[in-house]
Amino acid sequence: MQNVERKNMENDLMDKIVSLCKRRGFIFPGSEIYGGLANSWDYGPLGVELKNTIKQMWWDRFVRSRSDVFGIDAALLMNSKVWEASGHLGAGFADELVECKKCHQRFRFDELGEISDFRFQISDLNQNQKCPECGGELTTPRKFNLMLKTFLGPAEEKANEVYFRPETAQAMFVNFKNVLDTMRPKLPFGIAQTGKAFRNEITPGNFIFRMREFEQMEIEYFVREEEWKDRFDHWQDEIKRWIGDLGVDLAHVHEIDIPDGERAHYSKRTMDFEYDFPFGRKELYGLAYRTDFDLRNHEKASGKNLKYRDPDTNEEFWPHVIEPTWGVDRSALAVLLDTYRETGEGKDKRVYLKLPPKLAPYQVAVFPLLANKPQLVEKAQGIYNKLRVTSYELRVTTDMRGNIGKRYYAQDEIGTPWCVTVDFQTLEDDTVTVRDRDTAEQIRKSIADLDAYFGEMV
Ligand code: GAP
Image (cartoon, rainbow, N blue to C red; front, side):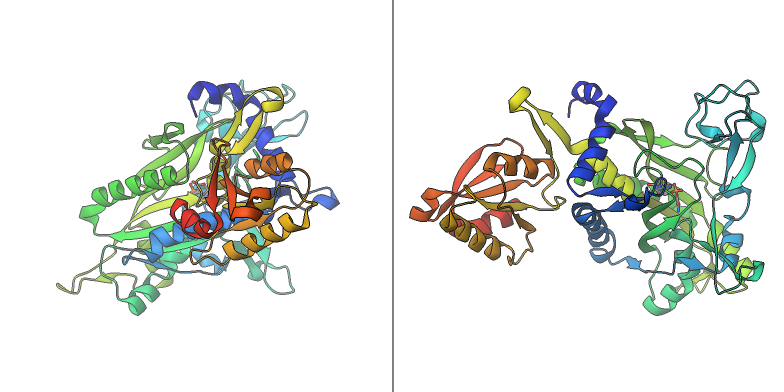
């Protein structure tokens, strides 16, 4: 979409997306019938299709179709020693929390004022900073660790404390030796995982942008130290290619090299991929050069040899790591925001999601022109049944309610690229209309050709 058009829409774009997601079954407020649970969200029938398709697309591209990346699926709860060694239980994984002395609202210190994205030090405190809600005086920032704690077993005592993982990454380091011993890969190679992560965020919000429970897709790519720059460039290109394939306009994405002093404790180079969200330019994905920080520390803490042995020279060393990381929920949000379209005025106004066909929850909708004509309904049902079993697993839906205009409107709003309509001519010559979501134009196609036609289009 043109930037100007987008700007005009931005003020209420988030509200429109949140409302569309609820109305059409993409995303619901969590625990809604009990008044909700702040900032928790449940994916509905269409949302889970979108999310699962994103994850599957990622897995196919970065694991299945590559011979140098191996997948794992590790436990959410890990031995607390993992988090001590990784640094997550220390100051490096803490945000600075300030509280208003008057209204007692709590804020992430780095989100106050002009500087919004980078974590910075207590010494940077602007003493004149006031509460953005009531203007009251703020407390001095104090470190607040983001790890989410729980207890294993019946006794809630220190010995039983465990933490939900705050990133999927550490399981890849902890299983480095297992993958090495079983798959026998040669450098460079990667270990990949998708799954839930938990952070006790001080200020979750902006719908599914920042949650306490979210999903990540991560790769730890192990390389020789001397080749880290080339591999970093490779993953930078891969991330950009991925964003384009999601249907997100790269003009809305900005690559930011994070300067010294503002990177995570483990990183020698970090690049954030920021997206123009309606609430500001914020991190969508990240790419980090983690050096050998993690393997070195886990070896030290566990006492287990986590080195790679070069098969030619027998030399042993800790490989260095390039880590591309993707948020699943932020991917879904960027896709929804970036593909949302409004065209026309008044009664001609049309809203649609210009989702790439491979991402659309349904790729084709089949219906009769009139829902009260049994012959049309039966014919539509037959086409629907046939298209559901194509060799390329087309995602098909049908809708027998309301009038045809309303059905088109509903399919446009959920991003279904094509609608097939059975009309009276169908009964005579076995042809149907195929309507294109983006142009609303219709062409006539023979029923016998639909399978091959959609196969090619998808
Ligand atoms: N292993 C590195 C790591 O976890 P991160 O930048 O903290 O790096 C990676 O997180 C990605 O996870 C982010 O780029 C973002 O897409 C997603 N993410 C992080 N925190 C999130 C949250 N609270 N809610 C939703 N997504 C989040």
